[in-house]
Amino acid sequence: MIRIENISKQNGHQIVFIEASAALQRGEKIGLVGANGTGKTTLFRMITGEEQPDEGQIIVDRGMTIGYFSQDVGEMKGRSAVAEVMDGVGPISAVAIELKALETAMADPERFDEINELVERYGEVQAKFEELDGYALESRAREVLAGLSFSQEMMEGDVGVLSGGWKMRVALARILLMKPDAMLLDEPSNHLDLESLIWLEAFLKNYDGLLIMTSHDREFMNRVVSKILEIDGGELNTYSGNYKFFEEQREMNERQQQARFERQQAMLAKEIKFIERFKARASHAAQVQSRVKKLEKIDKVEPPKRRQSILFEFLPAPRSGDDVVALKNIHKSYGSRRIYEGFDFSIRRKERWCVMGVNGAGKSTLLKLVTGNTEPDEGSVAIGGSVKLGYFAQHAMDVLDGEHTVFESLESTFPQAGQGSLRALAGCFGFSGDDVEKRCRVLSGGEKARLAMARMLYDPPNFLVLDEPTNHLDVLTKDMLIKALADFEGTMLFVSHDRHFLSALSNRVLELTPEGVHVYGGGYTEYVASTGQEAPGLHS
Image (cartoon, rainbow, N blue to C red; front, side, top):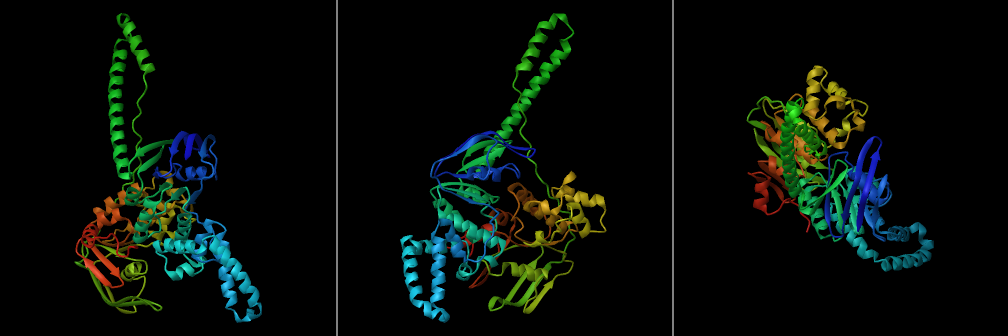
């Protein structure tokens, strides 16, 4: 279906691929993995023809349709979300837009004198719309958008007023509705809530074309893909099985390679020792020469590549009082939309609450109430004695000054801190050596997230409030963060759509539903076991 034959590619001074090959077949669900900067997006762009390999070729079967979802969604405005989604299917979108415009025109009293012409044209356009199976397509478009948590109002409204995250959902819905022969999905799990993520899992499992996707969500990958394509050192390595199996296999391969390397090093050391010992003796000249030739011919075993890992280190925080925060009789509305009515909630020291609920249930609002970033309409929020709060918001990365370097960003936040301690802090969050001189505007999403966390944790809090802290982090960095937070001695309140993160760190669950607020004494794993569902608002 798609054949990658001996491709080589260089971006500037960086060699991305060296004679890499792979065969990708219809029906395969492939996870594309590799460290940041190894060429995952470049490979997608070469498959779609946006870029060409320097050598070799990528052969796509004639007539094959490809849908490519990237993080760059482009300009969207002036149309409804439904029209934007249908646009990917072809000319039917233009017909749908004209149909809507004619409906508006016919209802306009100022255009009553044109009514005959409008009705006649409406009949023609409607017939064409029906011919193209427009009503069925529109229904499917609405189903996909509903699966991605769009309300009816959002479907009908101008897509231009939506946030970047919701525009990405529109772009994703467009690809899903197309149902092309092959889907290339670059981080489709970003910006999705848990309910939408679970819906997307089910959709992709039932998709019968070729699926190639990248994702930093370990659980999502495990449930969808059955084959892994790894970019490593310019090569493409194929593994059967899901992401968990790939990790186990890679770890085993690395252990075996390390053992082979060590055995060969021991043998080489022995041979070199013999040569050094007897090279000056004529009686051993033939043996020495034989061993020298043997060493020249030997295929050297390379040690396994060391994967760079970041080790987060949270400084110990001062102990807080037992009562961390208490919300009493909270009322909160946004216009006519009521979020909380008489809501009571308290958090005790060392509790780790994850907050669950559909979009609009009030998850982020709760975090903002606790942190003082919004005020209740009625009621009180009381922070306990000796509580030192650290807040990671979804927009935390947006407030970074693009012209500041990493070091300057830390320095402006903590002007009294010494240079040595700030550099040590930067190092703990993966900014070592020259990385501290990078300007914030060139940082990746993951790097910005790490910098925002470093700023939050320099003066260590004992109460962490986290709103989607893993959104932009790769799997490796996410694992490091989970490990660090597992050792954190303080209290936590957080929202996340990452099931691995939820399972590893929560010991309490607060579920916000239209029927009311529910509290579960165990963590996310116990919540799933007791409710039989992974999220409160799953779509059927």
